[in-house]
Image 1 (cartoon, rainbow, N blue to C red):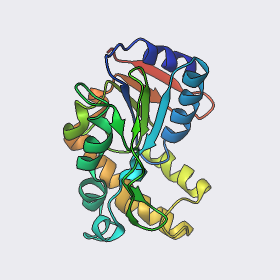
Image 2 (image 1 turned 90 degrees about the horizontal axis):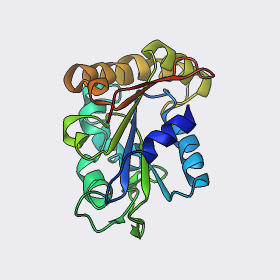
Image 3 (image 1 turned 60 degrees about the vertical axis):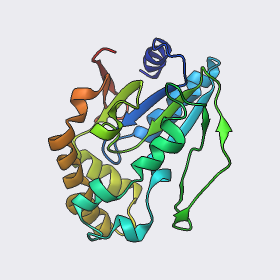
Image 4 (image 1 turned 180 degrees about the horizontal axis):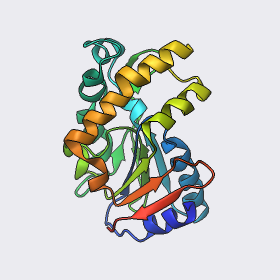
Length: 217
């Protein structure tokens, strides 16, 4: 499947770096898919830029201003979408100068980050993974849209196995998913209908047997 996805990437012709969104709920497998796809594309000689929405968070106080477990806060307040467009997506897009930064936030210090800008080759590929990437204000910034689909209950199981949550406890993982992440995804689906806008949907409920659905470019 990764080879087929690489073929789909190669089939998209642009005069600027190709901007690929890899969207989906938390614990769907977005980062793993993006990393594996990046490895194949690099083996094929493409210059790949890897970036993630986690490096475009806003400081913790702003993220949680509606409450740590607020679904609305997760969807509306967590990410600096304006900065994402300004420093990464627009410079790599039509008419951009290709000078970009891949991050604006340092999670270790909960402060703004300003890495030195880099210049992308015109034939570079940006593989950007994260949540809520196909919302209306970002939709036209992508040249290829991939959505990794996993049942919400399965993401809870994976989160428990990984032990991924702000505080790390099993109870906090459960509450984070039940009260914040899953309701935020339900809000996203209800308002933005992300799978309707995806060029490719990867069905990843079975990690060893993913399938994909090509919607057309």
